[in-house]
Length: 188
Image (cartoon, rainbow, N blue to C red; front, side, top):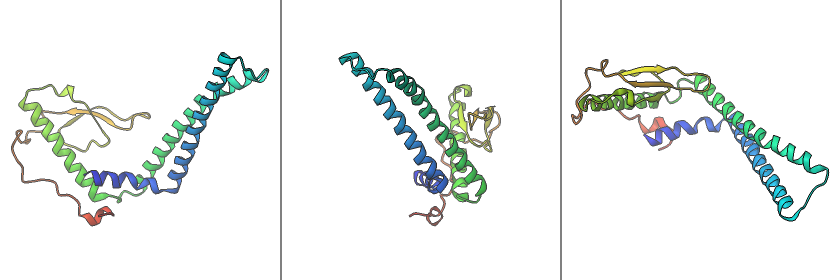
């Protein structure tokens, strides 16, 4: 399963627009670190040995104090742009990793079923087990919160009443989800 997830995560990273945004984000991070280092050295030089840049001291400090958070915010904006590009890529290519997505959905459903069985067997409160899911096409969940502009996932809890066919814990099912064939993964 790890191999499937890594393959799916690596696919959009090869897009030219995403690579460009990665490079720009790296440059912005380095600029922020460089500015923070320079201002720290100048402040230490002024405090320890009395070194001053004269009339340029105030301008340099104000510019650095402004540019450090500015470069950090710009890098965060690049992260947002990368996420938008990746979402757009998958939205425009719904057939991509179709079998792998189906396999992962089946595995997730089995995990949800196992959690419900465990909660029923131990008479535990499902409200203590909130989960973040990007899709809600699973049986046995109740949606608490829908995605927002800042949060891209649903907050859900197990719904003990909706799944009556869950097998008790320890019972083995012969109906395991089948892994996609290796040839569908791109790499062996």
